[in-house]
Image 1 (cartoon, chains in turn blue, brown):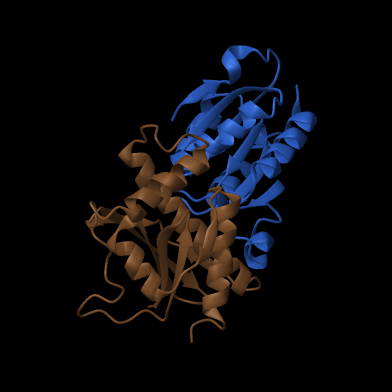
Image 2: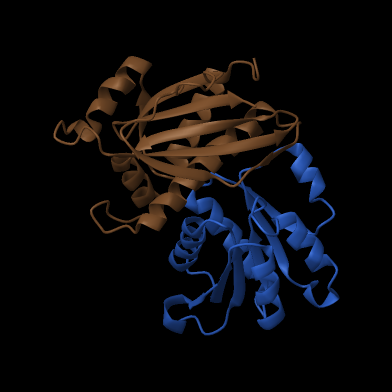
Amino acid sequence: MEHVAIDGGTVPAGINILVVDDSAMMRTMIKRVARLCEVPIATIFEASHGVEALHVLETQRIDAVFTDINMPVMTGIELLRAMDSRPEWAHVTRVIVTTDGSSARRDEVKDLHVRCYVEKPFRPEVMRDVLTEVTSSAVR
Amino acid sequence: MLFADVDQTLRDAIVEVAEASFFAFTGPLDAQGFASLAAAPGGDPAHPVAPWFSTRVAFTGDRHGAIEVVVPEALAVSLVAGFLGIDPTETIEPDAILDGMGELANMICGTWLTRTCRDGRFDLSPPAVATRQGAPSIAPIGQAAPEAAVHMAVNDLPLRVAVHRS
């Protein structure tokens, strides 16, 4: 688990994002897009599975969670269900980033307050658009 | 057959993943071409037994099986560099290569299953990445031949994806 300040804090007011994926490479890619697209993000936290993500949510002010589904220890679906059980996290924007674009999976997350469903592979501009939408609606 | 038209659907998934996420270019290749390139990855006859990566992702749900993605080290480095937007000559940690090959196989499998059974349901296992010297045999002695195998040139280097029924 780690967190990085975007551009050394050159964006003074922004939201905190948590990226949850068991692939460090995918987490790096999302962080890189966030840096390049100049959206108002303060800090990006990382977790490699749902349990780590819950620890970050417990200890940090998180505004948006970008989570994979298929992960060891705790899946993204289990993470979203755990988040739904905590009223203090109701404000957190939820984005799924997954290779699983089946209608069955999309149906499964319908009631889990998911704002965006991004299918891998995605081009960087797709993630940029999602980040822009999320930050514009969630800037504190 | 586990899937209809498996060769074309798998090929489409490989192209989509390679081009959209790894910024690689793809081209056709047959088994003979694969063997030829595999004998000298990167066109370098001085290194005919360079390390290869073999990544397996199992799937369960409406259909059961596994895919195995096989690439030489030179292609693995090229793909990870493309994904991360860095120069392939920069040092890439071995763990990043393993992680990248896992994500490549995960994306190919997930994209292929999504396109071929969008109304179905599937779960993927965590990728299992192995390395060995030289291209692994498509059907090692004592193991069943795959249901299908697709060969492609990616960044002019050989890639093979095999589908196994479980």
